[in-house]
Length: 142
Length: 163
Image (tube, rainbow over the protein chains, first blue to last red):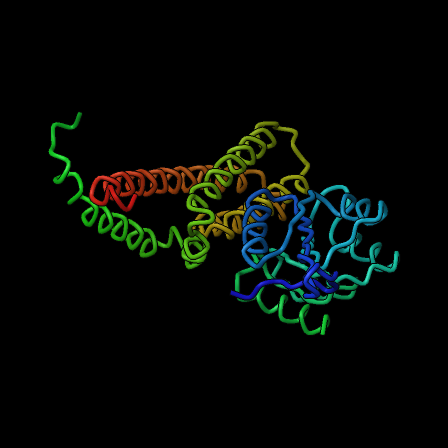
């Protein structure tokens, strides 16, 4: 099982660098998807936080929170995934943002990607897709 | 309380496992469930031993809310908010896909097509079909989880030291 290893660490008493646990923000208004994505990311070693819409994701970042990866749904009330992604990028958030959408139309997925996503998958994310994200994060870390 | 000796109860484990497999095979054959349900089962382990039933129960709770909302919208003869209906259907489609509820999802697709055409009569027909399919799915999944519960209990009886 691939485990998330922190992007930065601190030195423990015995001189071995401690790896910070990676964190994932799950942005989705669908409770079933929230549960599935939470379990997948937890199994991969992530600390997870879940919010119901894009505005809550933006507010978290405005208040100073940061994450290693954001799983962003496209269609949500209050603020959808496209708007939230644009806002986060405009704020200078460079976190990996992964779109997860029920929509299979290429044109809509393209609009979502153009908002600033790093990746886009059809939901729900499966374990193999999630592992590929961890690989990418670990590569960036190195 | 069953009147059966404990050792006999334990022998039911294999029979119950076979019943579960047969029921799942039937549901796959009927197109009620698809491969996504197996993906959920693969996520279940010692760290989350009731994951599948928890996710399915969330699905039931959300689905019944959505069905009430859809029924409420369509019960109004003056109804015209097809956009709202589309949003409910997108939610229903998303969660149905997520648990592998293939037939329910397919009915949602047809329902959404009718709502995009502002076709109230078509939507009413689709809603009836959706309620029927959902009911069938719910009954079958309840049956599946009941057998699973019995299997877990029977396994405890059979292997009391390990459990």
